[in-house]
Length: 513
Image 1 (cartoon, one colour):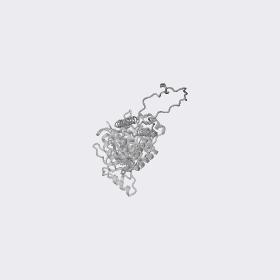
Image 2: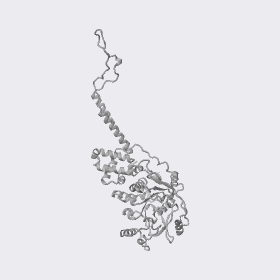
Image 3: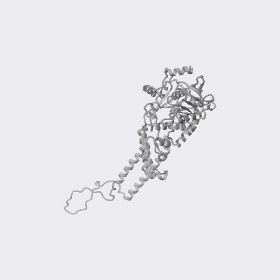
């Protein structure tokens, strides 16, 4: 049975525990830089793993990789252990799987273009509403034609094909402007220059590989190496949103389980919402609200709660608020608004305390067993048992080689998809055009024969006839009408065959999988 997870203690030794059955009600870890958010995230991840709950988190600074190694005698940690009276604290490592979109610091993580869909791709390419609509038409035309969009060269060739044949598609699908097609192509080129071609392709990440437990029943902590990816914020944010959408789509409804199937941490959460169109914000809100019933808890990590839209913030029941800095009137106003989101504590002036908290100190409010938020309290976050900080490259390599996923994603697969199919169509059309450009043969005229040497006859005799053995063998020569009819039948048969094959592929492979 899942046990309450000790996260923090007050100076009076009052314990603050995260209840496993409430862990899928989402949460928030907030605070200014250097106040202890990373250590809090690490402590929560360790306790979740101990309860057999898999975790996914993004390591944007490279210091969360220490979870994979045994902690050491750090003086600050030892002082906090003594202060809080943690007699059962022991240093140990935790089961970890490393992942990396760039494929350098973990198992490669890939997705297909079709799986992202036009909405996320539009945000990734920085498209406006009209351009995103044209991109949606490109996806629709590809689906109707049974053309798989797996990697960047597939979507680039598909956009070019739709642009070159825009007039043919306008009646059925709507107007396709050359300006929008050009904007999409420019965005794809920029994305490729940023390393997007490494993210798109196969084998695609099986989302169920993130929901694994170790042989000792502890949940595996999946760490995404994002220290380089964070330099491309839209790729980072889009990737995390795609993962969350995959979890929402693939996992079955479980209601209110004893403990979550998985807990998902969004670090640098403000990147998820900056510049996001209203349609995408609505989707994020919907997923956060409904994914709880799939047994998934979502925790946002950010510097200030105001980075989170109000509709999403209202869904976050478990909160750890570290210190905020308030010097300007606008910052003081933000602190006052944030303080009002906690359940009031008559003995605590929350608005004043927020700016006074020390490193590793926080305002804590977890959900109680009946689902109501507890009264906010001031407490110290318990130190983690694993290493705090970075690890050596050889330590990371050892963990990657020992992982159960090693070898499953390292080699990219490039099967036939939209790029190959459209290229073959172009080659066939060009070959047909070359054949049609050649002059037709001259039907009805006998081929010239070799001239016979002159014969000398002494007297007139019977007319010379060519011996039968020298006559040209073969079937009777066909007329112009017969040749045209046969050519037309071949053309019709070939067209029907292509339509049937395309239809079958569209019905089998035209979907998401």
